[in-house]
Image 1 (cartoon, rainbow, N blue to C red):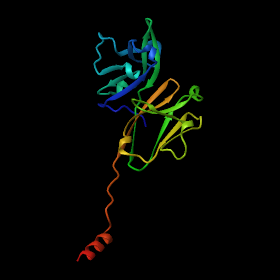
Image 2 (cartoon, rainbow, N blue to C red):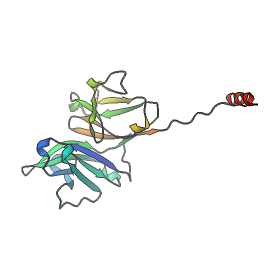
Image 3 (cartoon, rainbow, N blue to C red):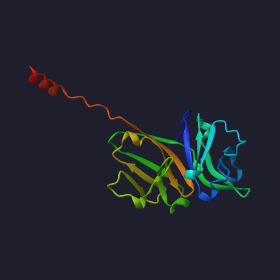
Length: 207
């Protein structure tokens, strides 16, 4: 299921080409690019409120942190930049958040939904903030810890195997110009208790 994690925070990475490293970047809210509302900007005069935008030109990425999330924050957002006085949309972000939990050593499956016009677009699975982590279906094998399958039916599945605690965090389903954030929480496997027969044997051997 998808929902907003009310009261929580989310950090969105927006990657851009090196030719735009000195341009003003901003974060825009709205289902249509034409009528979206600017929520944060790297313009020094901009007041951000619950939105914090930070540009890292050396990494060619700017990040937007939204704090104290509310139900009303559910919407489409755009990473954008200003080019020669013209606002240029970069990528669309769907802020309908999904959270999944799994146990250490186990596996978890993420369903990434997309619309029919995006059927033939490349599907990507990325760890938030790590552009080099992105994987697509052609790069995964059945023996990989991450397996991506797309049957062109409107959903591509990402299976993460042999979960470790370090796998917890934010990820992205990405199709075409649309990104959808997913939070994964890896919980510690419950301690297994030895049964009473094993305990009795240990006690007998120590007498």
